[in-house]
Image (spheres, rainbow, N blue to C red):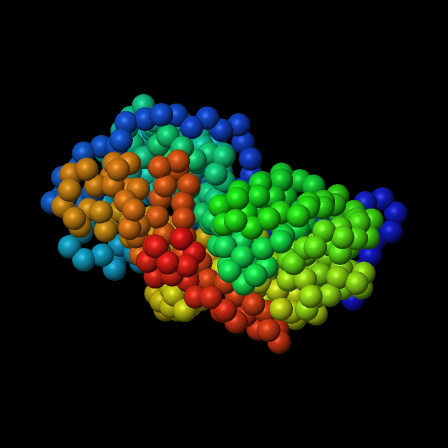
Length: 391
């Protein structure tokens, strides 16, 4: 049973480091740029990796190590391509990220991968926009995408498209949005509405709550009433496990919103942390995730190579190198231009297929999973190429 805090509203814990770091919003100014540099594919391609090392935060140094390890693992997997990887520490600081990006390009970098944090990625992109160099950032914040900046992180829109499309095919196309009253909740709701338009589903209503335990408690009666009165067939939550999800899925069934009648589905990973899987309210719930088999294979290889597990976002560094390697392998001097980076067939990433879009966002092949008896069960596999489910 979850404790309910009395008195003044108590905020939920901050989101997991990955989400908070990558989604933090900034004043973003994507800048139009040239298509990218010409390269000689017969020579080693200079690639700059910007990582958050060098700050006073031990977590930044750990992230930097994990990203660098994943990039080097990807390089070791390339065939017939030589990458000259050069690592630059940003200290998690936008000004230093901008300076390091400029230094990297001055030292010959033809493309930049990273940084991790949204503000840093935005600053790095702006700093080298006039130098005709593209940036493959590890952020998932689409607000910084565009111009010479591409985001590699999983986006709300990609997940919403996958989930709404699947729900509609299962006859659960009357959807009620249940969202946090914060930036992430607003962005998530927008993504769900866009996905509904794309798939032909109907948004029958939208309920929100103050981002606190008391806020959820106060809103639960209204959410339950709207669910029953609108003919909703599915409730799409923007909440994550560190926030309102456990409380929502506990209280709604207690207020006559039976998960066996109304499909619960989420915009976030419901298997992180694993303890979430044992919550009674999430049983039968749907969420999206990368191909579990591929993810497990990467984690095992990383563990064997470096003696410790990878951080979740380090796979993005592998993906960046894999994409660059696949393009350079084609022998085209325009391999690192926008036209090549946004090729329709995309790339084979360590967590599955992905492709970069002309607007700087990305599309990733995701599986749909259901929580059954405290376990993750894939009910619709991730596509292995674009054009199938999840596209």
